[in-house]
Length: 371
Length: 73
Image 1 (spheres, rainbow over the protein chains, first blue to last red):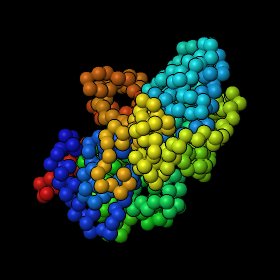
Image 2: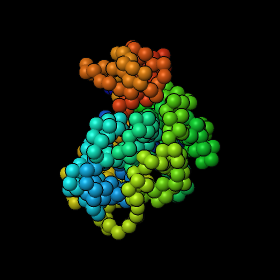
Image 3: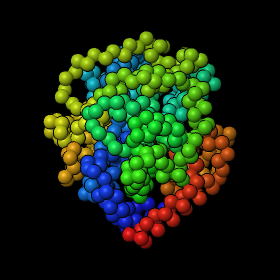
Image 4: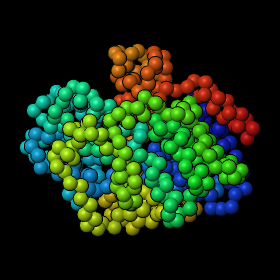
């Protein structure tokens, strides 16, 4: 599959995109919803090429570490610092998010407690099974790509009758924030590049309201350079024809119906709930929480955690605005000065999918209206 | 976080898991989200779970389209 990164292929696609963009009234501003797409756009140098070809890419809310609000991070910190003999398991990036209470990495755990970085949720269940004297809390953040693996962990803990395992969930689904973005007029997005691996789980249908109700084109794309450019090309084609749809250009990995087994597992263990997003407030049915049958595994309930939005920390961090695509990282006065990957002020500078970290690492896009 | 890697399934180990080849290393992954996946299939792995089987025919179709476009440009 070397063609997906081949220079000739990429150049041919960019030329084609330039021709198509020239037929449209500027600005041709498209949003890549997913942080992994943002990473690829910069890592492969596609963003400057697209900008030069007349297409402006704006990053969206697709970074789970970034959109998880402070109060959830603070609840996790409170748990591991306040309770002895507790293992707080989570994905690596989550440990570095700074809050008013510091970060999980800087926090000093209570006696016998620790923060454990894991790659798969299954490791948290294994830790609970291996160490019955400890409470294991899995602080699980993620979108639909990750959620089935988290649901699986909870079901497995129940099957094994583990009483020392629970989940502090920060599970969010991708379509609701897209509706929220379209409902405001903060920025005009003319097309969405949809996340390839979220879509491998949910399929095409959950995005159908976007062309139907808002007339906005969309394309589900993979993560190689040619995948992304095929997606952009499809968006321009839809704009030109005036026929918005949910196009699927990542057909090798995404079936139109998604992954039915993963969907069934999610439905079995989880149910929709209103949920808070950094920078976007509470969005209806945008989160997933444990169903009643699994309530015993809910860390919030088990430990009586209150998630309080204190909104008190004034750092000047504009991560919330970056996540809505209304400011570019460089427009934040903290960017690269007080806020760097070594000393991040907000989560957008922490996560490997955070727009600020990516912009810091790969530099500005010349001539981009947002930069 | 939605980074996921394509790997080849070497063999199923039990009802839930199997061994895959990731850049020459053997890795155990959970295959329960892909009923029917078998040795030799390529799958995409995320957080220790195979979430999608790669469709070789669709992959070839995309490559053909890309080659045509590179040729035409």
